Length: 115
Image 1 (cartoon, helix red, strand yellow):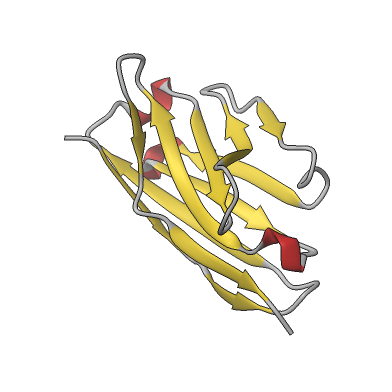
Image 2 (cartoon, one colour):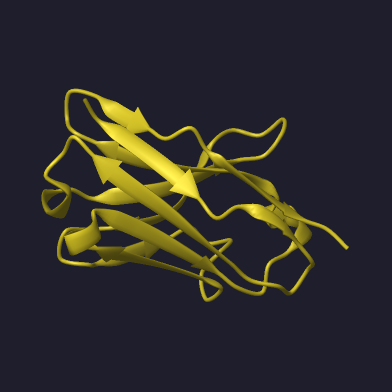
């Protein structure tokens, strides 16, 4: 079955950096667009970044220039490098893949930006 396992979240000060990782299994990873979403308390889940199988990247307006999405098809892993973090980046971050008939989600990893 499809599994997405995120890691790398934690507590960081404003202006700091974190790198999230998501390891996928149960899919032919290299064929799919991989997404990172986030959800803060009281907010809707929002798309943070996407990367196509050809490594074309798209970003949400709030993270452009600060976050970088990348993938390693040999490791079935997608990354989210987050820099210049702001308090408003605090959220649970989810890795996700849409297989057409169903979208799959990881369990999420908490990112807290606080001084």
